[in-house]
Every structure is written in C-alpha cells, then in structure tokens.
Amino acid sequence: MPLTTDVEIADLLSSVRTIAMIGASDRPERASYGVMRFLQDHGYRVIPVNPQITGEHVHGEYVWRELGQIGEPIDIVDIFRRSADAGEAVDQAIAAGAKAVWMQLGVVNEDAASRAEAAGLKVVMDRCPKIEIGRLRLP
Image 1 (cartoon, rainbow, N blue to C red):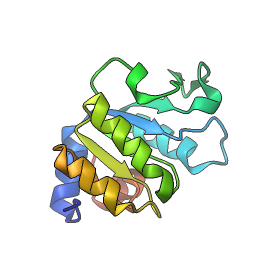
Image 2 (image 1 turned 135 degrees about the horizontal axis):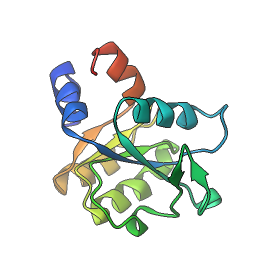
Image 3 (image 1 turned 135 degrees about the vertical axis):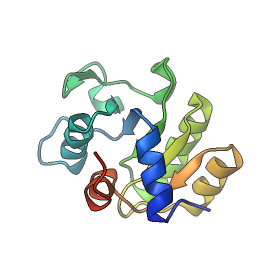
C-alpha cells in the first residue's frame, strides 16, 4: 500500500537526504524547477534526471540522462512524468536500488506502485514533497 498517513510521509521525508528527480527542468516556469530549489533549501541533495538536458546543470547539480548513471545511493526517486510514463521511472528506481518512489501530484500508476512495493520500495502517489513538507511543518 502506498504511504498515505501524515506519520508515514513525515517519517519518509525525515529519514532521507538524496532525491533523484526524473523530469527535472531548467525552465523556471516548470513546477519541477521550483520544487527542486525548495528541496535543496530544506537540506536535501537533489540530483536532476532529464535526457533532454543531459550534461547541463540545474541549481548547481549536473543533469543525468537516466538513474543508472548516477552511481551513488538514492533515497527517493521523485517522478515528474505523466502517469503512463511513471512505470519506466519506477523500473529505473528499482534497478538503481532506490529506497522509495514519489509520484508527483496527478501522477498515479497502480501497476508501477505494485512493482515498486514488491521490490521493497516505499511508494507515495499523487502528492508533492514541497506541499507535504510545508503542511507537516518539517524542517
């Protein structure tokens, strides 16, 4: 079952430090751009993943083409993709050994969530960590 309670979500956000963001953008008008900065400002290391801007930098971090290239432990994979594309991101997260997948607001993929849970990952769907951190008053 995906994490849904305030306690579960607060525990997850309080226990992690490294977030890989699939669909990170270098465009300030995009939600992922602002969410990435917010997470960095709250002490998280956010590693951007976007094949369209690979090799560039967003908020001081190198942009990777795919999760498997990062080569360091990932706590959460934050998915800024359409629901239909979330499955590929979840499969990459499983292969990369991530601890959790977080599907952004409006992103729901039950099959992908089931695969993640079967592989031992925690799952959050249809929520934004920026909103949750503010709502739960996390540091």
